[in-house]
Length: 331
Length: 305
Ligand SMILES: Nc1ncnc2c1ncn2[C@@H]1O[C@H](COP(=O)(O)OP(=O)(O)OP(=O)(O)O)[C@@H](O)[C@H]1O
Ligand SMILES: [Mg+2]
Image (tube, rainbow over all chains, first blue to last red; front, side):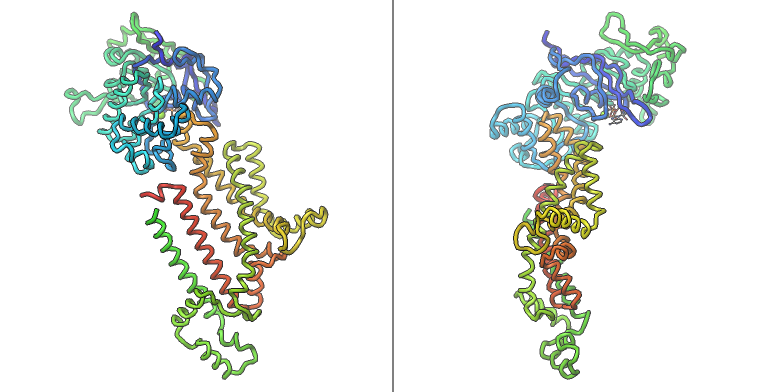
């Protein structure tokens, strides 16, 4: 063993708002192993970013985190003080954000920002740190690295900045990297390069990777396991094969219908989409959160909260009360 | 940076030239200098003679360049009232005003920047409320009233500080507080809003995600960006203090350039007023130039493009 990089149990995030408490993340359980990529997918606003920020203990001040267990490399970091957590951040857990254009400080050079990260967590000289930073820039495919170190963020393109962010996150060789939609803001060709890079580096450093995305094409290419989130809950999780070949939750199935299939989908044909809206998560909520948008909805769906249930003999689990037999017929 | 500096310098020179022309025109337009020099009782022939003698009958542009040349040589003409050189008159008064201005802006910055930062770190906390209270007071209190209150308490009742004059540094304490406190609220509020804005940016989140210590996040990453607009504001405030310290200089009988300006205006002493306007404006221009350079140094996006 010694393989489980991160394990989190019963994570919830509540945000008190003027008109009630927003239950943005509800009872999430996740784990990531070494060398594994967990993709979290789900539509906008379902709580992916809050989940990842909660793992880093970087939630906005007003958000309230409740969490049952949080283990990093099989040791609990749940009751770490803020000071201890800051030793973990950037060192054992790194994070890459969606917005490369604004995620680097405009007032300092790339070199300055990379060196400060290293020297925060390692006891090394400035010039050694600079050498390491340069090597890391080369590793993420940045040419003229020496010169880049002296440049400011606004002198680099979005794709380059995201490479810099990746390099900076890798400096301390963390056990886990959380990447929150790292390519959403980039051109399509650059997106592919960045994802490829992340995958290579993850293999090289044998890290755990949590990749947040709403692009199922990305998931298919890079994920080991998938967690599908809907309205603050994980509604289905399993290996990438299980999720793509045998999706169980009606929401997952809906998502799968949304993917255009080359050869099958004719140009101009409308993609499958899921009609309806996500329910408000302010105040208390009973029953299945997807009920309003589900084709198969029954009375039982709204009666009580739905627990995750395992697919017999598999590592897959989903949050639905409907008999799988009945579901297969419709799908 | 060099290109930027040259550009700013060129701009500053252009503004200086415009200001000098306006300042010259002020004298030329407002009254007939020949009459002013000859005095009320002079005959038409005398006035005409003076007009010829001093060249007031030449075209305005010729007179301007002539005047400009002399002004650049430090000759700003003679005061109608004191009958001495305007430049030496201003030279005598300027150090007092400068000392007051430097003390006051330093006091304002030292008071308001830390307060603004503290208020932004904990919005709606006690510190924030105290800062807000001080800032509202600073805006609402008329300077003269605040000055009088200080004099009543610190000089009359407690006998701690002298009320008037500019002989020792103690004489500058109350004027500094009054003038500085007047400038502090704006600086404080700009620091506070700037910090609040910067603290919610993505790069501050990145800095925290890197595990940096809270004070590094605050003072290196946040303040460095939040302070940029504050620099420009402080420069403007400093400029205002030099020209606009008339009330404070009068109350505390600090015979500085602000006081001189007021005296000269009431006496219709146009050459002195003109000279003061020129000096204040030039100083203002130099100040903004240095503020621009400081901004460029702080913000690489201005420096490198
Ligand atoms: N600071 C905040 N204050 C109030 N509500 C918030 C805050 N941050 C997030 N939320 C709400 O919490 C919910 C989850 O937000 P989150 O950012 O985690 O969504 P997401 O899944 O990352 O969406 P996206 O794909 O758009 O990034 C949303 O409804 C959002 O409006
Ligand atoms: Mg998000």
